[in-house]
Image 1 (cartoon, rainbow, N blue to C red):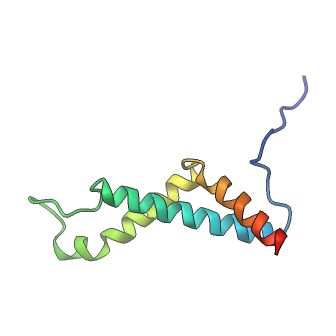
Image 2 (tube, rainbow, N blue to C red; image 1 turned 180 degrees about the horizontal axis):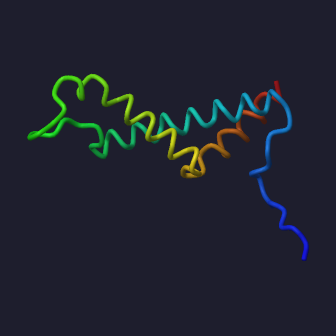
Length: 93
């Protein structure tokens, strides 16, 4: 039985430049997802039994970290599109 090899654009970066571009793409996807989560109401203070002013002040950090964990778990596929666009732009420059 032979090993299964990945096919498609999700190839692993081969150099430091590609690693840096992928990291930037992941951060961009995480920022996008964080905004979507905020729009959906995640991180808003609850009326009863909420965390008070501390929750208001640090809720955005929680939402951002949840978004980053979503990206690390596969996200919505935006990272790969962003990575390819950034790579094309940098290769063309």
